[in-house]
Length: 503
Image 1 (cartoon, rainbow, N blue to C red):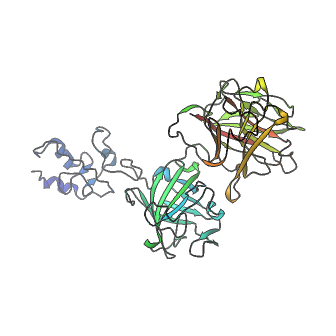
Image 2 (image 1 turned 60 degrees about the vertical axis):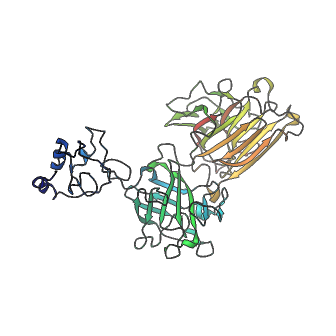
Image 3 (image 1 turned 180 degrees about the horizontal axis):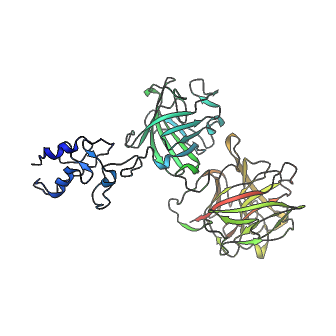
């Protein structure tokens, strides 16, 4: 049965190619009789040759026609020849989502270590708990299957008392091993010896050469590795690391066109997206936004004139851009609001934005009570999701204001600062409030940094259990930020990727 050596002899000299077993069984008859498909398969007319005559097309056989092996004409047949992307007949070296640049996330647990795989028994870093020399390290996976490392001149050296040491390594070769990880995850191995990096690493320099890909999304990379010694030899007694990285360069694959920086979630457990503006198209949605107009100082002695001109607010490429300009002897900007259009009571509010900077520049993403037009401020309540004063470009503030009238105005808030001298003008960040009955929590990049509840009103009514609307603006000058000077550059822009409400 199936002994056609005169035909196989014509085929076995064909070149071998890399393959993945798929267990495709060419025999169409249960009695193992020779069928038409068997003969055609042996002839190689399907692009396959059952070289070892085991009646299964596998890695011992030949695929001489990658296009034929895709089985486009008969998609019910399994593909045998998958590249690292899972593409039939492809030539991919690394998974597409891995390509691009990554750095340590600022979330809690970005570095964890324990005696067992995936454990954090020994140590887990706090939010923003790493050192600047770790946060500025950048790791770029390239389409040619290499890793470029940029340590910005120094690392935290685990073999020198965790001191900051100069380090010039800049590249490493690697092998990608689909399914080769500790628990069956995909894995890659950094290759030591030779090249610019004799003992390469990601994360910490006492991490090993083999990295399990525990999680890989457009925005997050979670890796797992065993410790090693100073010579890159495995050190089982040293434990196991888990690292969390965030994408910082979306232009090289996997990140789409959402811009560099922190990406928010599309959903949250137990909550549904009830409204969003993703700023698609080329015009501002008038069902969502209207404008405050004029140059009245706005209660803070500000200098800008708010307009509805496209010079000051526009939508393109998936972003809303609010622009503050110097025009003649004055300044123009935009203050957009959703009053009487989109108003909400409770939920998680996410706004992803990249902020301006400079002396006298004052961007804000905030909310006022929907009864503001009737009752005024501060009795309506104010929730400042994010404010930044431009001479402090690394710090944002979250604040609440309340009081039955101006004479008893109350407020409280806190701030959060990016590590390592990073600025909010460098990349997008996520500004959020989780707003519930009688309480509000403020987050930056999913890190809680402030909260209030209805017991903290100092004898004034609690206004935050009613509907609120959104405001987004850039002020120029004012009592808090001060005023532009010779160092202030114009124009200044605030780019908003989206506003989302989950309930």
